[in-house]
Length: 362
Image (cartoon, rainbow, N blue to C red; front, top):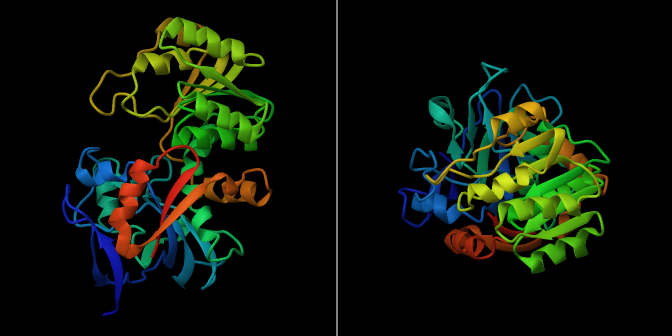
């Protein structure tokens, strides 16, 4: 039996244990990847402590996806080759129901009993020298250097808002409002919306320094709005900042935010507009989001609840990067080796702001 080094979470509330574990064994419909770089989520410490109550069957090697090189392929792979640089997509779907598949986020969490069943096999994530994935979750990047692998880890962050905008069918020339624009995922949503051709992105928030930085990075298509906390006043300020009717509102607010802040943003959308909900309101046990039934019905508002992204999203996003429409060099990166995985988790928690990326390089 061959062994490899990995960071293992053995119990909630305890540090990761760096130890030797068996290498993954290839099966039909699977690919094994040598992990070169993997991102550390800013809230990974809350997952490991149990605070976020994520569905994880311990012990487990955590880590949602990453960048690596193909080590071994099964007989169903016709485009991949050993040595290819790839993105490892952590969104694993059951294969026996294409309409409503169960989903597990490999190395992070699972949705419902079906997702937990899926996690029993595709469980171990990317905080290791190797990982095993379903063939369809391994996406070719093209040629990159080992050093560039660190920055390509930003794909994992950018894919989340990209999935939301795909669900809302965002079109070039439209006006978008990003609720939560000053956060890690929200700032990524701003860059993705602009890459997809948004004519105007309204960015409400309280942190004026971050709002100004978004304008500095992306120019006059970004329209910052400083929130006051007054729901009605903030809603009108957001509407005024837009260059016209707001076609799409994207919410990625964290669980700690009041639902009134989210509602103020959501209800700026025009009649026949679309709203994407990808945030965490109510997930920590607080009040949920209340929206007026008559407003939704009479204005023909489409509300899309979105978790992650469709299977083809990663390849399409890679194409946006390759075309120069989406820039990975916006991200400030800090890399740790696998022996210092716990330090990486602490660093990510303390440095989770916009365009910041903490990475482990096994």
